[in-house]
Structures are given as structure tokens and as C-alpha cells.
Image (cartoon, rainbow, N blue to C red; front, side):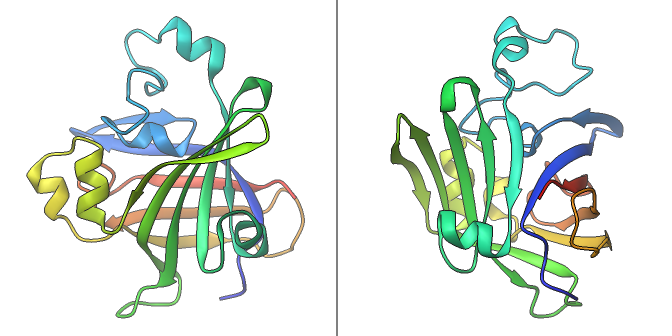
Length: 189
């Protein structure tokens, strides 16, 4: 499989929760109870979107390859949430092709970092050395903490190298809350 393109924005995510499909606009909305909290970024179509949600909904970007290396280090990927007034949250992790799977299946690796970037200064908010530690910091239950690492199977990848290319991936194992989620990303640069 070719080297992934550099910067992608999420077009949509199908999240299967209790046999119900909802769509969400950024990666972190797929993590109820996360550090950011589901109340801040509820799923689209949820019963009552909050005023805060409508006022500060961030743009969501994913960095891979050289773009990620320059921002979060070698062998890492990052999801960026871009808020108004130049405030960014960076959620980064390691990533490798799954050792026991096809090269199109990627395994998300520790350490997991959540950083705040504001006013030209970057501050580490959370660092966890394992999936269980990161899920515990997110107030996840014992089942989620015991789950294996997240794996994403890339089922479709356009490789023209131009903006507009699409990538489709599905969470095939790991955190029980997001297993089965389908993510569609569009290359933006």
C-alpha cells in the first residue's frame, strides 16, 4: 500500500451504538466520556445539541506521514481539533501496520498524548503509556480498559495525491464503543 497522503479532513463517521447508526463530524465525538466529554461534542442527530456545541464546533483534521512527523514526531499520527481564535487540541498516537494482518490494517499504538496549542504555546495535558491507561483517564469502564488496541482496516484509498482523494476505514477491533465505526476522510492538501 502506498504511503498515506498528508492531511485529511473527516467527511463523516458512521458510529454504531446499540444497533443505531448516527453520524458525527469529528473523531473525538466517537469517544463518549472522553477527556473532552460527549456533552461538548454530541453526535449529530442527538436529541438536544448544546449552545456551546453550535458556537465552538471545531474543524477536524488528521495528519499522516511527513505532516504528522513535523507536528507530533516520527511514527505518529494526529487528530487536530481547530477551534476559533487559533486554539487547537492535538490527540496523537503511534501507528503501525498490524503484525498479524494485511498491510491495509493499522494498529494504534501508545503513547497517547492530548496537547493544547494556544497563543503560540503547546502544553501536554495527558500522556498515557497504554490503551488501558488512556481509557482509564477517560473514565472508561473495566471492559473498555481490558479491550485490545484499536485497529483500523482501510477498505478504500484513493492515491492520486491530490486534494479530494477519499479514504474509508473501519474500526475492526479495540475499544468496544467504536468497533464497527466507519470513517470517511477527504484529503485537503
